Image (tube, rainbow, N blue to C red; front, side, top):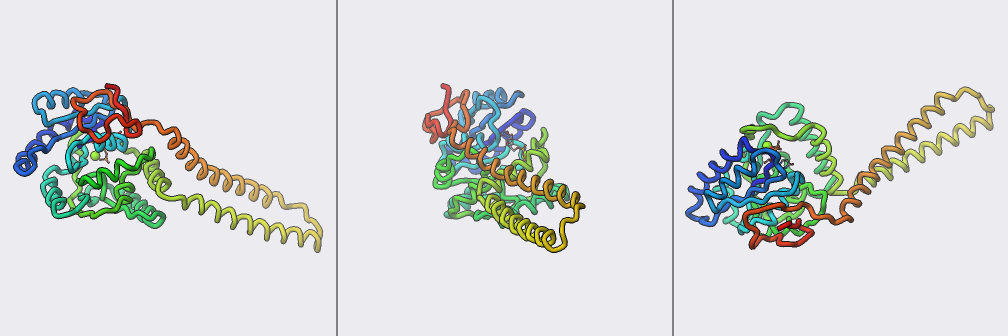
Length: 320
Ligand code: UDP
Ligand code: MG
């Protein structure tokens, strides 16, 4: 299952590579099929996939009504995949298809999910450091353990697919979700590969947002930290007030104090805004959750029979 956004430049090499792979594992997995989820591409991606589906009935596609983001696209794909096991792969050939055979073996040996974990060769020094730092923080703060490099290139067995589909939250940080479901997980390592064509859509801003999503959707420690910070600030303020009052009683009021006053007001204002921001982040997430909108809308597809998602509005709806 391949989520795609504007991948016209690489979709054909990808389908060819998967086809070659199918030739090698196909003897044992005759019903191996390719499901492309078009996440609202504005280029020729969908046309190319449709053409491929005409030529080869084992290519299926699902076209979402607009860009819903990779997380929603993956959910759509998992819901509509019919295979007992589902492999999730990027379109840009950064997830080498030749690993699939080994991943299938590990699944047969009893794993419920098989993760292909990349190293960071080729990534910039800052990016590597930032990512490492993020995963350290994430692992320290939350109860799930997320491996650096263990991303969305995975093979999920039937139990894992059902487990992921059973989580209906709107803010989906799938790296965390995959870790949260637990189950027997096998890992294989591979060397990082660059994109074959096109460009990654991850800008620093979206990475920061993604990181925040990860941290906030798995725990409420920031809220607790806010509470502790509030307690500390109140205690310090109280002690300081007592000291000022004591001094005023004993030595009288000395008027200069403008600097202290301004600093205190400004600083406390800042702290309060930050804490409000933390609250707001959670509130916004709750707001999105309670609306219970579908995660995605399917605009068209070449086959929807037997999909796990069916017409369940919590899993996405189909307009056909
Ligand atoms: N993708 C998607 N919807 C989006 C963004 C990305 O389906 O809104 C797909 C994209 O086509 C690719 C995969 O998600 O198949 C990973 O995207 P990208 O290569 O941009 O991310 P990176 O590899 O840099 O993490
Ligand atoms: Mg990529």
